[in-house]
Amino acid sequence: MSRPPLPCPRFGDSRFPCAVAPGAVGPDSVRLWLRSDAPGPHRLEVWPLDGEGPRRSVSWHFAADADADGTGTLLYPDDFPGEPPPSPLRRHGFRITREHEGVLVGEGRFETLPARPEDTPSTFSFGLLSCHQPFADSGEARPLSVAMLEAARHALAEHDARFLLLGGDQVYVDEPSSLSLFSPAYFRGVAPPGRARLLDCSAEEVRRLYQLRHRQFRDVPGWRALQADYASWPMLDDHEVVNNWGAEPEHSDAEWQRLHHGARAAYHDYQSARVLGPGAPPDTFDFSFDYGSTGFYAMDLRSQRRGGEQPRVYSPAQLARLSSWLDSHRDSRAVFLMLSVPMVYVPSWASAVISLLRSHRGDARDRWTHLWNLPDRDRLLGLLLAHQRRCPGQRVVLLSGDVHLGCAFAIDWLGDSAGSLYQFTSSAVTHVTRGFSAWAAGHLPRAELLLKLEDGPAARLVRLDGVGGANRNPYNALNVGVVEVNDRGTHSTVRFKLVGQDSRHPEQPVTVFDSGEL
Image (cartoon, rainbow, N blue to C red; front, side, top):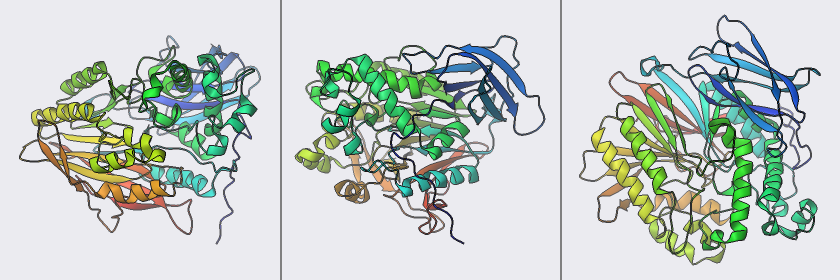
């Protein structure tokens, strides 16, 4: 029986007035993000979805900050003195309304975290996804992209995913090309008075333009549903600012820095505030949290990135925070480090060659293997190697997006007892890629067999085989990642699945790669 096609929204048709999303959760708390187009009294209801429990209801005055485009967050129950906390490891529903009119702002779900390491479920899963750009140049959402969001929802439900990690590029300000804020024709239709191009705008004007962009990209029903139904931790990547942000030397110029400040403010309004809370955006958006015996750290590879004579990918202060975090997580069964740009992708020789191609020069400079980035790559890998030597029984996994490719690698240190470092990449969830980029995604990840640190050890790169016939690695079609963590008593194992679409029914998920337990 044929199914009716899913409705495909058009870019900019609706600028939703209201939305909600659960963000950072703890064992007994949740940070809820909302956008409401009217200030005033609002009501929050929270109730358990599994088992018995009361339906709690609290009211507060939502200020609907105009500078933040009507967005804000609340921390439940901490912002409501006397309100009892939710219980650990329980699913909850929530609903926010404007109190006097009864207008629905939004509703969704979240699951609280384990209270102690020993309370960690024997098996739990979470979702990994990145690169949300569903629109064609016509402005219509691609049917395949809309169907992939439905397939992702089915896959996450089937695997009982507890939360989502969003690996970057949840918004594209520069794609599709016909609707790019850098397109003169498109910009004329949205430009502030007296501005001929985006780079002429003040930081405040950029913030408002980017806020609109966040609304336009969020206003895809499947994407909004994913944001509402799972607690999610997002990270910034380049397209939330501009393609290859920070990799070009000119990005240090004053006009680009104004754009950077406005873009980061809008990103904080719509994404990072759900993790870091309200207020001005911090210098970097890196964050960490624990799911029982498993630790998670997300690095910000964009906010302080620069190319040219004094290049860097991240600040020394951020690496120091990661080092302290790793030291405090020696007893964790597994640790995950989210890097928006994958460590293993384009081989060094390819990075050099691509640098000579004008149309792809920035892409090469954006990779860890570019000469500008190798010192920071080696410092990070050296830190991880030292940690693995101290914690040989711990699973250490890199999680990435960005490259419009799903893949799984082991990084095996040669002649060293540290064992394997794993890298899982899921990208893109809705961005259909063609041409050279699609070819590169399917071929270049196979090319480099050895990774050598300067004045340090070497590692062999192993492209992982799949199990049960699910062996498409790399995979260069739309995908979502599902990561499974299994407690085996004395240690944990990890398992990575890439989920694509059924060719006949693209709204149905198909596991195209399954690493098995590692």
